[in-house]
Length: 268
Image (cartoon, rainbow, N blue to C red; front, side):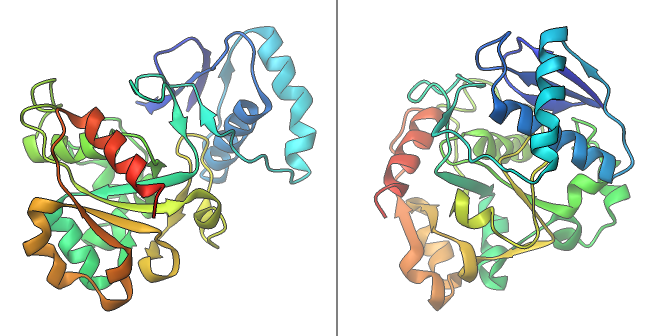
């Protein structure tokens, strides 16, 4: 794995490279340094070294903060992270909630079993085989498939991936507007899920959890598109009924839906 730090459209891990965008390049914050060191620790724990390609000033800042990180100090995320500003409403990632999004057919099974499970447990396929599948376009290593992954609460990435899986290709603008069909969103308060005994910080995602997350223990709310209510409400466990909500998708596109869901979730 290689870490490239600088001016990019957003932070992402793709084909063996972490492209780390700085919110105020060339300046780097302690939160951003913590993310980089989290990524390096995770990769080293899985036998992969991570050379860094960055300006000397950035390398010096990382080196200076490393003893603090190694002492066990963990910073909470700022209220908004502006490494990605694609979101038209918030111009950044809001950090009070994290979210896992599933296609309706998967959500039906998730609700029946009461847990979010890693791809390895969910599909019963070894991680090495999952990493070889064509759908692994980013060429993620096998261990990535041992975790349940989460995005920030106002992010549309989960629904975008649902559309990608549905179409079998990367969705275009029309797919994300007129042709957009939202998935089911499972919301968690960040600080609560971050305390999960199997929570891991890999420096890319807000948090991910090894193996599974039992919904009744951690979920804050479940958002189901209203047109799927008849199909799914009978599968909702009694313990989760008061945390399940059905919202009408009367939105022009994926961005409006993400805004609507996030604004709603803050009220419950």
